[in-house]
Image 1 (cartoon, rainbow, N blue to C red):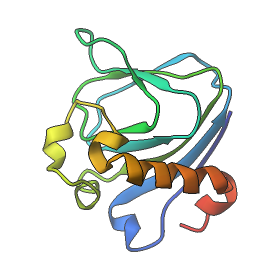
Image 2 (spheres, rainbow, N blue to C red):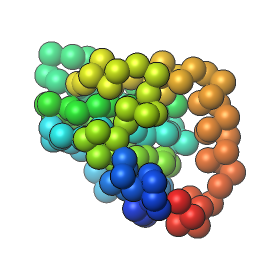
Image 3 (cartoon, rainbow, N blue to C red):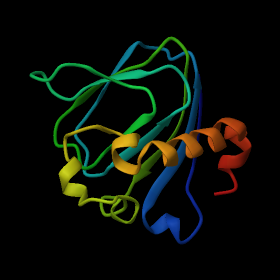
Image 4 (cartoon, rainbow, N blue to C red):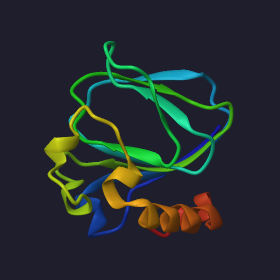
Length: 141
């Protein structure tokens, strides 16, 4: 699996810890993501992935990606056999300018990118990312 991470240039570096590109066969089928003081966003460019956001919640499939703000509990993340995505690890205050709703509404609740920005915006974003070279284009941030 290839994982490339970059700190963005100003002014985004004031909102974002890093941008990353992930591609290949994961070394594990599941990953437990611990509680975190910061939000994350994943734009999925491959097969759907699964997230279970707590022991009492069923696993949900995410085809386009997801956003989660300030998760206060662990999430179980299930990778497909081959994965490809671009993601953002925000600073705790970072996602607010990118969301059309208060970030607190998304706490502990993964939502699809379509639910956040709408189908046309996500289709355009995924198309642009699919035609980009993840390793090279990430360094231009």
